Image 1: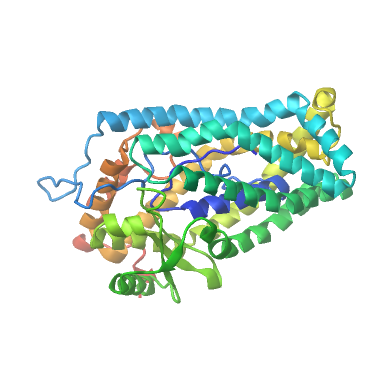
Image 2: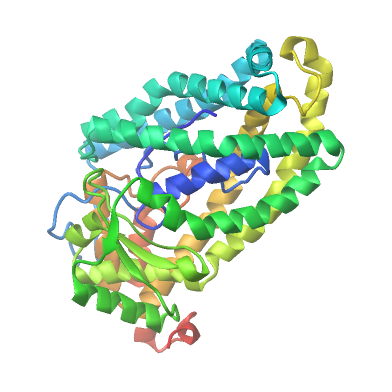
Length: 456
């Protein structure tokens, strides 16, 4: 399972979210293939995404004659970061596909299976040995690129404060999660293929959805704390304001957590996560320190918008559609490839554990092909969450100022090119978001607000 790493976003997932993706990738390996399950530990740094480093506590925005926040031109350093980030993203995509492809077409996967079978004898032991060896091999092969993209590069641009020991320790924790969960997931899927070779992909799809819901519920409690310390808000007054805003948004019974991310990063993030009894609002300590009071409340309004507007629910519905499509496509295509190239591959059946790298290649191609669709849909959700934040706060200056501050500190290109937007942008560009924050004010013109009925 090749992996790529990168920085988090202000409206979205942090290291916890990265871990959730780790678990969802395991579901892809065993139960499903999801358009929304990103590579195991996130993608390379995305300079146009809305959140990253905020290295100053002073406003980074200037106002024009109308009192609107200006969209600053990117610096030469920001443009270098943007261009080099695009090349790094492309390299990561190729690498993620190339490694499992080489392992399967060279027969290395079959030889690894033979070694595991000889040593393990029993099927479950052989599967365990194969998975552990495969994980160790791909971890070692990925490590130089992951080290550069997730450690060297963020430090070079002043976006990371993480020690080498902490970074590598987190990598090992992620690897351990994969190793612990891979055996039951992969073994269960192989058993389904053996018992129902024609319709296994339907049954795995039906299993994947409730498991994904369960992971969404449990991950904030059991996975996120493996990487960082979560505790109560240190500022009771700020916590009370956030809870009051949540109550206005109709999110009752929320708990607010502050996470110690300054040991890892200079980036900022905040999110609403969990499900039912695990529902919670999480703020990194860096965002509390570096955004002012009004900007922070707008960001929290955005996060609450995701929850109130049912974006998690909608993503799960899309997941339920994407999973059978991906697995059905894999079933049909993989069987044709095995029939034609079985002598080179060294296996003749889908229920052979040696077919795992072939699965990863085909699912990786599926995800890459559908990434533009997923990105466009995500951008729409993010835009609507921005609208929700503005309508619940009526704070255009706080909204635009937050994104302007992030642009400067993030070395972001506020208006990236169309290819970047098509393939990589899961969020509207910072320039678009600042423009929208400046201009969207129906309450000032006596016009109806889209989400006014959602507020108490």
